[in-house]
Length: 100
Image (tube, rainbow, N blue to C red; front, side, top):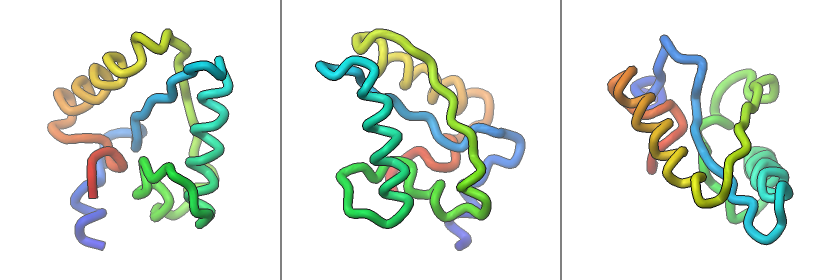
């Protein structure tokens, strides 16, 4: 519990930054990633464990998801830049980013 409390960024409404490459499936990449994310949170055995801390927060069923469409080539650098900007501003990663 203390480890989760130590990760909380009280002055931020952002708790996780991630990416979803469209790949060969087009926009379906985001749909698949969010579906896996939701299913993992519901306890199903899926290969997606990113943001696992989110599911430990009270009220997680009411959280909002925002996204920005960009090319697959820009996905990784954009994700890295967004995380770096968050870290520069808050001095640490978003609550649910980073390895356990």
